[in-house]
Image 1: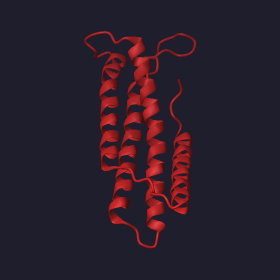
Image 2: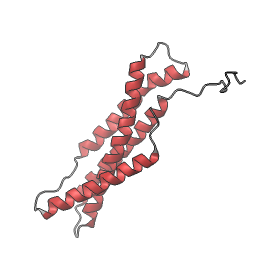
Image 3: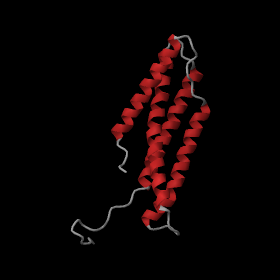
Image 4: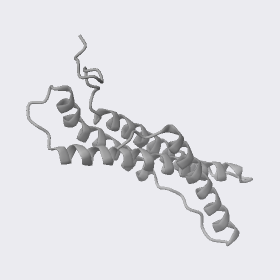
Length: 154
């Protein structure tokens, strides 16, 4: 599994923001209520980020040689995949939160509470993105001390 690239995260954030903006415009044009993310979503995203980092701690200890017991390789692989999924979903939800906030700010009379909820969701998603990247880094194996020809460097 390769590391998450920043360009993918930026593209997902732009896609999420654009999709959220278009959804809000379409809902408003059809006379329906717009989508407003609740405050609890921001807290849930932050809590998921904390859980992902806590799950990566045993893997980090095992890869650095400070673990007291062996870590199951399937656990390590699942944790690394969850970390990558967290960073990708954090990017798309963060972009959507910013897209909703931008749409609300473009209206003639923006509702401060609604903008605050959208920005809180974006902040929670960005924290999830950061936690996913940190956990992904924690799940990497450090580089080997040997050179390509098999000799060990000191």
